[in-house]
Structure formats: C-alpha cells, structure tokens
Amino acid sequence: MMTQGSVDVRQARQQESLLRLTQVIKPELVAQVLSACQKNQTRRANLDFETTLWIVLAMGIFTDLPIRDVCRFTCTKPSMRLPGRSALCRARKRLGAEPLRQLHAEVVQRLGKSESDGSFYKNHRLVGIDGCLFNTPDTPANECAFGRPRGGHTKDSQGAYPQVGKMSLVELGTHVELAFHLRAHWQGEQTIAYRITKHLQPGDLLLMDAGIFCFRMAKQTKTQNAEFLARSQIRTLEPIKKLADGSYLAQIYSHNNHRRRGQNGMVVRVINYTLNEPSRAGHQKPRRLITSLLDDTEHPACELVALYHERWEQELLFDEQKTHQDPRRPHKPTHLRSQTPAGVVQELYSLSLAHFVVRKVMVEAAQTINTDVDRISFSGAIRIIRCRLSEITHQQPTTWYSQLIAEVAREILDARRNRINPRVLRQSRSKWKSKKKHHYQLPKLSQPFKNSVVIIM
Image (tube, rainbow, N blue to C red; front, side):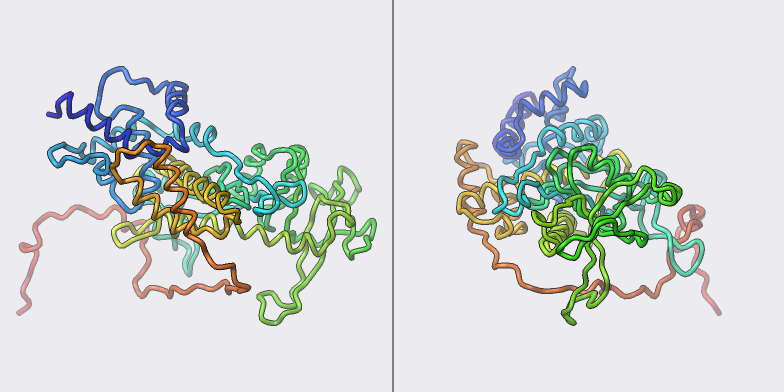
C-alpha cells in the first residue's frame, strides 16, 4: 500500500515536473473546468481528477511512451509504486472527454499579431478549414463508432484499422488548431465543416479547398461577418460584370432550381488561372478560385492566387501532429492508442492541447528574436520541451520557462525552398490478402498447439 506521505511526495513532484505546463495552461482554469464538468473529488486518491487530467495532457507530449512511463517522469524514487495500467485506464474513463473539450475551448487562442508573421492579409486574419484521418486501434468499439474505410478490388474490401476523421479550423500563420470536430467515415466533410464555421470571427478570411466549398459554406461564412477564398469546381458561372484584372463577378446558388429562376443568388468574384511553368504540378491545367472579396483594386487577382496557397499551411499542421508529435512506430502501428471511442476523443483533444503548448512556445521564441515563427523548427521545439519537461529541478517555473523560450529560439530553420512534391504513394501493395469480417470472430482453439500436430507418414 502507498502511504499518505508517499502520495504527498508524488503530488509535489508532479507540481515540479508535469505541472510546468501551467506556464501555458493555468491551474485555476483546470480547476474551473473540472468543477464545471462536476468532476469534484469526493475522496482523497492518488489518481484524482486533477492528477489524471495533467497526466492525459502529458500524454499528448510524450506520445512515444506508454501512460505508465509518463507517470514515471513524476517519480524520482524507485521505491515509489506507480499505478498499474488498469488503474490509469480506469482513471481516464472516470475523467472522460468533456473536461478536455472544455479546456481546449478555454486555453487555445489566436496567437497571430500582424501581417509580418503570416497571420494576416491586410485586415483579414487567415484561417483555414480542412480534414485528416487518424487510424485507431482495431477494436469492435472503435469500429462501431467510427467505421472502416471502404474501397478496393472487391465489394467487401475494407481498411485495416478503424479511422476517425478530424475537421479543423486553423490559424494559418501560427498553425494553431482553433477548433475541431470529429466525424465517422460515413459523414461528409461539408457537413462537419459547416458546424465549424460557428468558430469564425468577424474579419477572418477563410481558405477552403474544392471538396469543402459549397453555397451553404459561403453563406454561413458571410453570416459570421467573415470572408472566404476557395477553390471551386462549379462550371456554370455566368459573368455579370468583368473586372480590370481579368476576374469577373458572378452569382452562385444553393441548387439548380434557384439558378434557373435567378433567385436567392449570392454575388461572388471568380478568378480563372493556370500555371505556365512545365516543372510545376498542374501545368496549363485551368483552375478556378471564388471569393467574397469583390474589390479588384484593393485585392488584385494575382495577390489572391498567391494567397490561396497559404492554405497548405494547414497541411503542415497535420504533418506536425501525425509525423512529428505522434508518429507511428513498430510498437504502435496506428496513430492513436486508445481502445475505446471515448478514449480516442480524449486523446485527440490531448494531442491538440499539447500541440498548442508547443506552438505557443514557438511563437514567443520567434518574438524574442524578431523572426517569423515559420523559421522555428517544430520538431526541434517539441524535443526540447520533452527533455526539459521531464527534468526535476528546483528552479522557479517562470525562470524555467524563460530558459525554455531562449533554447527554442535557437532552433532556426533555413528559408523555405521553392520546391514541389508530386502527389504519389511511396508504399507498394502488400502480397497478403486483406482482412475480412469473418477474420474477427474466429472460433476458440480446442487444444494446445502440440496436440494438434499430425506427422505425415
């Protein structure tokens, strides 16, 4: 049994190690969120709600470690007993995902300050909406909640792992994930993206790709007093006014009946362009942008075409989370590790909060040396945080944080190269047959392997 004294020492070490995150996530805010979620501890326990919440947050940073090893960083004496894996799983289940969801809404904020750091275009803050997929552990609960991807050479072909989709609203200049919604594979991207538009603020300029843009998204964006710039595959766009820079004004409609009658239309600006460099992907392929920025003098077409490619900053966010923050490894073949849907939701919020911690440190480090945050290495920053967060020192948290900022500020990258990457797959097909439904419920073995051996004479 763990004594009361050892529990107090453990909690003191947590204040000194994991709770250094309080430089970004304030303890009073954590207490407020737990109280709002009615997660008030009624009895003294080693894994109370507050301790469990900090451990889950640390899981978003120490993604390469099992949860018990995350706890081990808070323990400096080998004689102290760590909680077992089952105890930690039960503590996570008691905590649930709602405190993480509310904490994300309270903690994550917009960090961009000016046009110089790539966060603004004139008076408009650049934000983007896009989605990505995360593989989850192959459990019946995850498959029931999220489903498997379909497709292949046969009707019953399906993916190896259940997948959960995430649609995110991102501040493009700083890569801060402002909000996200999860979706199962049968839910459309446009439906989930529409729900995220409630997080837009007046003055935002929303960048969207063709798979997300639609009349409803455009209308809702304007309702939020925001603007949009999107790639579109709408073919029927009759010019109502040609502009000096080659773009023109047209109307879009919710469906064809309104278009034929000329009712309930929305005036937009259309920019058609192509690329004249043979080395670039899509050479001489016609492309079309649609925007609510109608003034061609204040917003020239060439500026908007170049601006639209800032949308790829959102892909870098997904790369940071899936490749650098939480990469797949031989002992963890999926992106996530949670065996239940509630654990998956909890883990994704933990990853997003940890990502915000790293990006906030990077933004503050870039400000100290007066440079763009794009010049700070994300992988270098998260490695430094992992090393320094696990240190047991007796420095004041503010002193420790200042030294952390100074160290991250030295992780400078070279200027981005003018390069292209073809959209191709490196991985080849497997020679093994794909897993089918009947492989999941095999009959139990009736005898040991040795008894089943029959020698052929």
